[in-house]
Length: 149
Image 1: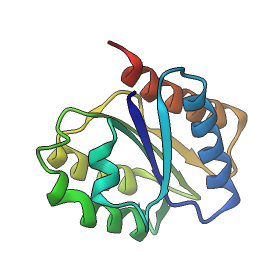
Image 2 (image 1 turned 180 degrees about the vertical axis):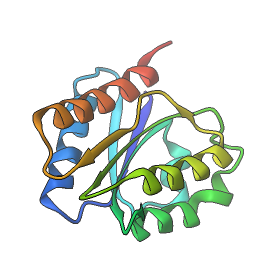
Image 3 (image 1 turned 60 degrees about the vertical axis):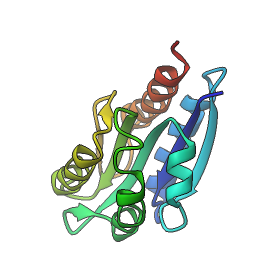
Image 4 (image 1 turned 30 degrees about the vertical axis):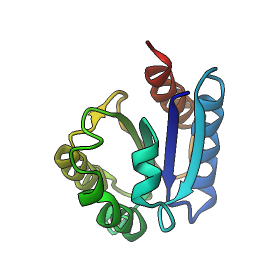
């Protein structure tokens, strides 16, 4: 059975709302197992054992969170090459700007050669219903890509 790994750093109620929407969307897809790991505890083995990824992070001072950066520092070389071509999606929450955080993640996943399968979900301020729906769709879309033959 294909497995989706959701790696997140969720220090705020806003990010918790977005994470729950991603998980709810992914859970609606039959035939895909969903694993959830906080960014500070996710390991290379988690990445290697899964077939696709959803990443969630706050934008801290315009950059990806230290927790998600730590995740990439831990998994980058052990997963380089072995996970090329796998699908991923990203959601980012910030109060003012998320562009730097998106750029940071894009640089890293370009090196890993992961394949973006959904527009990045960029959320500023309190999550509006359309942002929650976009995160639901993000989780469902990445899971559907894994379920496809």
